[in-house]
Length: 91
Image 1: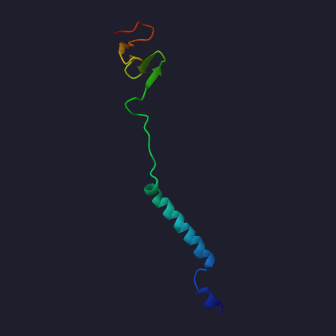
Image 2: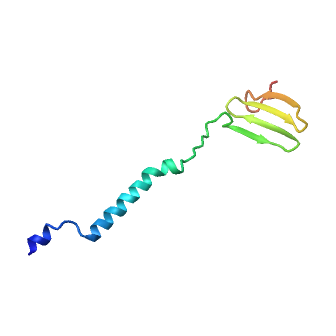
Image 3: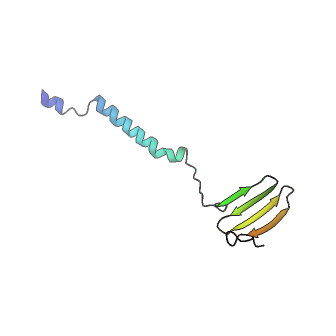
């Protein structure tokens, strides 16, 4: 009798657990197609820019040492370059 029970195979609990595992793996595998993750990059063209305002909009590019100024009426202000700390700005 025991030999007959042993050859019956997995019981209902094992089938249920394996079914849940299979469904969860399917959800994980299909997740990238259902809701793809958006990625952002901090290395874009404006990475490293520092902003100052409010009367004029100034940007400082830390990589090049340049200061760009734009006024609220849309005109472009002076462009300076920081060559060395403690020294005057160069045009």
